[in-house]
Amino acid sequence: MRRESCPAVLVHGWRSHPGVWKRLIPHLEAAKIPYWIYDHSEMGDAVPGETAAAFGDFLALTRDETGYAGPVDIVCHSMGTCIARYLLEVIDGGRREERVGQLIGLGPPNNGSSIAELFSDPEYGPEVVDRLAGVFVPRTFDPEDDVIVQEFRPGSRTIAALRGAKGRDDIAYRLILAANLTATPAFFPCFEGKTWTLGPDGEWLTTYAGDGIVPLTDSYLRGAGMDILPADPVALAERPEQYCHIGLPRNPEVIARVMEYLQNPATRPGSVCPERE
Image (tube, one colour):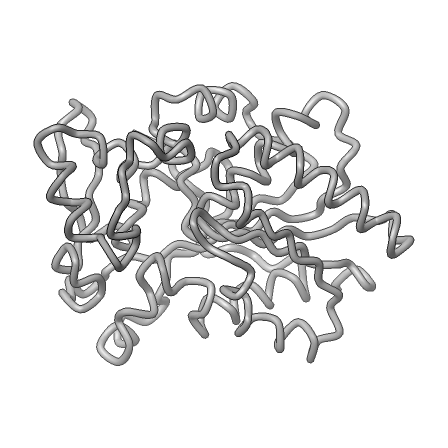
């Protein structure tokens, strides 16, 4: 059974805003699940550690305002998952004062972002940025000037800190991911339905095992529960674009899975993450 009145804390991703949760919120309200929204959209120039520390301040303030001292479940999109992880594992990892039952991440770049690294590649980067302009990045986007992009490259200090923290055994980690199971180009037209990924030998590859922006291997987190959607590949024939990275917070199947976890934390994930190759 679900813990009584356990709030869901919603954390959006990079260059995003709380509006991404507008389709999830009615489900939370119908289920009488309290929700707190962390808005870090005005902290674009802050390093992830600063945004994570501000998240801790937000949780403390909201607990004071509501009088609630129990555990919370955190639902995050994309980079927001790593912001939450930085707070829980790096800043609070030793003390474990933050009481969290579940951390539910939608398409998170837990191992660093391949696309962030690709942006800075002298051969492929300019073309990729051009393809994503107006879709995933602003038309005036310069990756070298974007603090978050630089801090989410796989070799960055932020990712090194997360890698060294090694997670918390008092939190249930749930990853909800998407893959183009039917190789449908409309899944993410910018890349003909594929996702760029950095291969084991440092070469650039494209794969259908990703959501257009985040390949599955970027998300893998040792021991975390994992669902790869859609559960039925037929869904990709109907609305393939809902399963790309940008569409995950608004995707009905994703929302249904999030609600399953929030209403019954004992829900079994589809599988467990493999070791990242």
